[in-house]
Every structure is written in C-alpha cells, then in structure tokens.
Image (cartoon, rainbow, N blue to C red; front, side, top):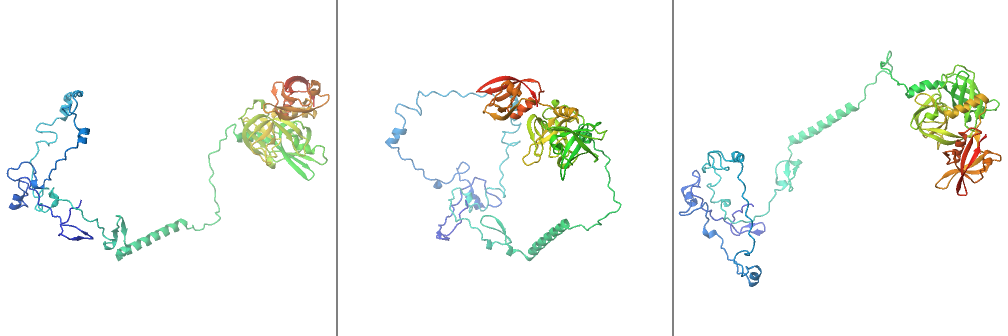
Length: 544
C-alpha cells in the first residue's frame, strides 16, 4: 500500500476530490530510543516514556477504539444456545473424563549430550557468551530525525487510497529502448544515434558478405583437369576372397560344366532349354520332353547341345516320355563332365537349393533358394508339345524362368535332386514358385529310355476330375475304360475315389501320382464312395 500524500483540503486528483489526511504525531518511544546523533533535546522529550508508564509501547487512550458491549441475546437464541438449567458447568457432569496424557520418557543421555546448550550459553536461541545488549546508533533502523513526519512509524496513522498507477508514455521515455504498458522492451529506431545506426548497417553488410563468400566457396566448380592421364596404374588388392566349401559359388563351379543349353531349330523358328549330362562317357543328356518334342520326326529339325565352354555338338533323340515329361538326347562327344545324382527322398522342406540352366537363353545362369514344398501334384501340359503328365514335384522358391526347363536343381553338396520343369506364374515369368521332377523319378525314366527307348507306367483305366463335398475331397470317376483294371475291380462311373492303399486321394492329380508310384501288375486297394457309403475294391494295375 502506498502511503497517502498530504494534500490541502479540497485539492483535486483528476476527476476525484480527495480530503487531506494528516497523520497524527507518533507515539512516544521507549526510554533511550532516540538517536543521540540526530535527535535534539526537544525530540528526546517528545519520544521519551511518560513517567510511571510501563511496557514497551503504550499508545494514548484517546487512540483506543471504544469497545461496544454486544446486545443481549434474544429468548430464541437463549433457548437454542443457552446452557440447560440442570447443568452447572460448561459440559454435562456425566461426560467421561479424557484419559491422562502419557508422560514421554526422558531422552537418552546421548541425545542430551548432542543437543544441550554448551556451557556459558543460556539456551539454544542465544549465541555463545549470552545475548549482547541493545545498541542504538545513528544508523540504527528505529528512530531518526524524520520519525515525527514519517507515517509508517506511527501504527495509528490512518490509511488512504491513492489513484491508479500511472505508466509513462513511450513518447515521453528517453533512449532507443522503451518499455510498453505490458512491461515489454522495444527498440525505437527514431532515437538511435547516427553512430549506432551506422554500426548496425555495417554489421548487416558484413554478415551478408561473409554468407556470400561461404556460399561461393561451397558451390564453385574446380578447374578442369586433363581428361587423359597416360601411365596411370590402379593399385591391386592383396587380400583374396575366401569361398567356403558348400557355398553357392562353390556349387556353381562344380555343377555348371555338367549343365548344357539345348537349342532346337525347326525351320525359321527356334527354342532353347537346358539339360544335364548323366553319362559323360557315352554322351547321354537328360532334359524335358516339352523342350525337344517339337523336333521329333520333323524333317530339317536340328537339336544342338552347347556346353559351358561355348562349344557345341549336334544331338539326337534317344527317347522321350510325355507321361513324365522326361527325354534323353545323345551327343557324340566323349569325356563330358558328368553331374552327381543325389536322392530326392532325402530332401526336406527348407533345404537350400541352387538352380542352374539357361533361362531366357542366358546360358550358365545360377539362382538360389530353398525347398518350399514336397510331393506337390502338378499337371504339365505345353502348347506345341504332346506332354500330358502329372508329377509329384519338388517345389522351390529359387527363381526359375522359361529356358530353365531340363536344367539341374542341386542341393548344398552339389548333387542333383531334381530336373527343373515348370513354373507357376500369372504373367509368364518367375514369381517365386518353381517345380522340379524328383531325380529318383527322372533317373528311373531315363534308364528305361536309354535301355529301350520308351518308358512304361501303371494305369487304372479311369478318367476323373477333382470334387469335394465340403468335408472330404476326392476324384470323381467320369468314365471307366472297358477291360481296364478299374472295370475288372468293379469301379463304376460316379464313384468317388478317396484313397489308394494307405495314400489319401484329394484330387484327380493326386490319383495319377498315387497310381504312377506303382509298377504294372501291382495289386492296390482302392477306396471309393458310392451311394453315400464307402467301400474298397482290389485292382490289379495295367501297363499304360
């Protein structure tokens, strides 16, 4: 609160009239409170304690406000808040007395020694040696020569309100930095001196010059050097690349010489595929039937095998099997590198594999992946070929493209486990699903072709299509060949074959694979569903 200013009666403060408020003379101070350096004898008499007065401060009686006794209580108040007539004290006599307060035990001797006052000190609030006496000096904070006119020294000085705080307008403030009504500092340019303004302009120009120079240095182009440098030599590295045994590069180096490109030319048309050397001494090469079937029996057709070293030889068809899509050709070139044949029965899903062939006519192409599925029934049929086969394929995610047909699918040891033959694609290219004929099947067919020029297969003698009733799948018999193994076993049209021996049949492709896994003359148990009930029949397989 700001102390009121002494004004004359009737003085004006803006639009408001303020009466003069003069503080009464201050009360007398305690004896000996005057400052001997500033106070006069008259001042000392004014501020001395009156004779017979006791206490540190006793204001005059005329300044004490009159105490007005409270009005007597009404009958309603006495009835509501008065003491009952039967009660003599402040509380009822039957009120239970509070339990006695427990007396805390005396503190331990260690606590007393730690916290008791040192010798010569009266208490914890007094400094060592006792409290010093009060001093009154000319610089003391209590009484000065202007104490009589200072309203803050008089506790009985009345308070008064003054006008609101007045802020100095920005136009009236001096200097370039001014403070607005919200206390924010602003720079007033019109008050800048010429020297300060010149320094600011020079600072801006200097900053611009530095920025421009840095930008020039960063963006400038170096002077052109001569385009040719005769005698330049590159420093070779001494460290060789280590290729571990079993790596893709190691497998490719071993198997690529045993994989050939098959080129077929019929008049002005031509096609390419791949093949695998299975007998290097006699020049036998296994490939797919659909690769060379178009040249069989056609006058003027040429089949040529191109080896990894770029040399080539004419090839002749030894035999081909449209029912398994396997064919064998022969070249008159002894001493060829022979591929190592593995076993497809030992392959499991997840095994790493490498596909080697001539996709899109690019000989010696190597791709890698894993075995993604086994025993996948895949129907093979190609335009311009008499291939009509269903194989129990090895599925892989190694990229296989047109031209890979007849090439090798090898395992981590470099052994051939399949003959690449088909891809699953929506647009004609590889989408990560390739299929290979298991090498066990390919070897069996190749041996028959080399021995006799033809291969034999077991046949049941039915035509079927895949069906399902929502809970069970099977192969619906569309017709039965007269005199076939199925006719002799009593299989009828509209029967649904669901199993051959212990192998479940869920489609027409699975039925072909199940029958082809047996030899002609084998007797098999065929389970069929007829008239909502299942039955089994015995069938002795024929030769296809």
